Length: 250
Image 1 (tube, helix red, strand yellow):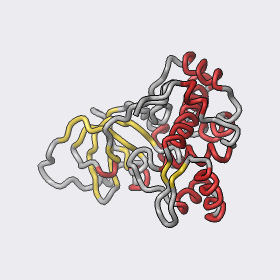
Image 2 (tube, helix red, strand yellow):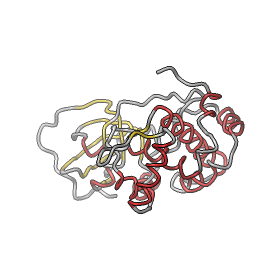
Image 3 (cartoon, helix red, strand yellow):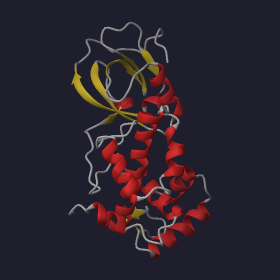
């Protein structure tokens, strides 16, 4: 696919692309972003906090606008035009989140709702200037890639933390901002995106991680470890099975 320029990206934001349409496009993209999961109407309704009939009506509208390809009982997929609209909104959202954290002192667990409100109000010129002001960041505070002016972006090779075996050294790449407890625990432990830790135990999805040379590990329940993506730096075969430590905290 030939990347669009920022001007071409702006062309996707027509009068027909209402705030609701933009939110739906961005959400559809986000639900399939990391693992290309099938996006269902029920998943979309649950994420947006709306009813299934409301989703059905909006998806029909988006299909009429050429933004989604959807057949009854089949997954909802963005068309190329819909994907460009979604990426334009993702760029706005993640740049605003980065600005709120870096320059306005917000915590990374506070920025999502603020960015949701602001992303529809700012101009494309504002977004481009914000990108320049921030030094063209590649990821937002949660580790999600930020599309460039041409709406292209790169994803690291990651795995869900809950699936990483014990005795692996990993780098924290991304945290799902829809799981506030994961953000809170990492903030309490002063673990930011890019932090390198050792997986000292892993059992049935629960994980214990520790910084190199640190004492006790941080115990993460499965739902929290499932909200974190890491890249594996090294993996060593443990000499024996490594149960979860009873002394681990988190």
